[in-house]
Image 1 (cartoon, rainbow, N blue to C red):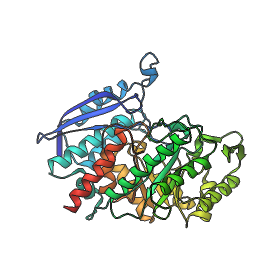
Image 2: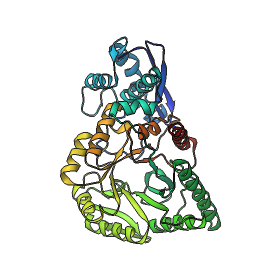
Image 3: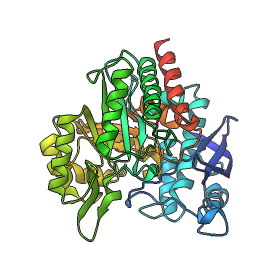
Length: 418
């Protein structure tokens, strides 16, 4: 148990230039820590509520002074100089908020305190953050996750016109994280050269991947394969993952998915979209598809899992939002075989750990993720190792708020290997 003796919050900017919450706290043993809260652009409607001020005269309504005030007043008054461990603090904050979605105090306020406490508790116990998190879940052996690098950005993360939000690179047949990062960097820069040669722009999207205006989603896949081969590798060693973020091209009124296939506008029902995914998996080295259907299309996910679940990783993000109740629903539906894990979707470290536990109990893969609005905080790197999650994505091979997570993972690998 530890007492929080000082608590301070401030407004900082995330990687998209929007305000987010930063929290600093001090424990009674004088150990101090801070945390920066991430923010998403492509958000599921079932996520915990990120409290924004709504004052259009300030940051176009995206200020977080209300969340800051909640930390500085109500939360501070209730938790200062009381004994807590991680579980009891998070439980107290959830009950203090009193809503299902943390909409009163704000998930961004609650998560900032939860993350900062975890980091301070680790320091006070002379542990690395990943070691501290391991003790919370009961893991004795740490492992480095398989990274998924978002090298072409589409959807809501770029103005490339691509329907698929993330085209991810997965170097799988390499001995360690250092080597996987090196290979990804080489392919990334080879892709840059190819785009230049073909006259495409090389500007990047929110998550650091290139955002060329291409003719089709298929062309993006072909360019990545060309880059893999030209960099000296093959598609047995380097695979591809897709975050379709299908809710973003789903029309709730018509119940159809509106997207381009082979450059032509299509309006598809779930069964037709599934046929397209099957064609992609057969034609390209796709090992993972995330959010292939909209966040309410349980039948679409279920059929997808029945047909392709034994061949690829079928990840739910907007469908599940790191929420225990929705993961339980997915278990009943047999809708996925992997769960995306985002701290700010649920709002506390403890609930995130519970989501990982439940995912692992099904022999599904927990997949730790950043958000499109990131900070320099590397918490998710430690989270992925500490909870022994087999997958992580933190964006591309550019933009410091993405790279810092990968650099932290290399450092952790060095520490584990002595």
